[in-house]
Length: 204
Image (cartoon, rainbow, N blue to C red; front, side, top):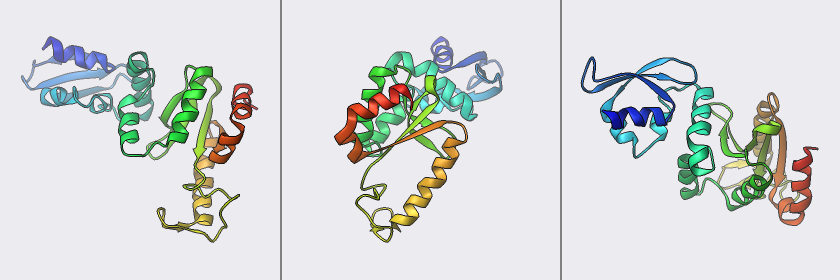
């Protein structure tokens, strides 16, 4: 029981009771929003192998991000290592994005990779101290206008470049509603990395 209680506390929950009403049930309270939840102890045992399921007992996006920051940053140096490692293994995070992130991390220790803005939008990089979102646009995956015409058909995304740009524009408007936004194109990073880092530092 002690180990199970420590598991909840580790991921941002206060324990009201474990096994009081049922030997398989725990009642816990989110340390962020103070909402009470019931969780089966079997789920806790399984969650030790997948800590995201414990972080996400409370689905409030503010609480999820708060827990990731407060429980993971100290241990791993990034606020959501499990999701990041998972996306890296599936090729969801490019070497370009990773390179940008670790360069920025040298300047801004609070920088986060794969920060959830909403249930449907995850940003590439977020610097809380500057309220700055950085999106890393790969030349191929985002059809850099320097190299692709509006009519170019992206075989992987299965849409024309023009539609891809329109989709990105919608996403960018959502991000700009609450954050500063900087878009870095892959080709610009490769040729002007130092100038881009200076711009981020000054947040111009």
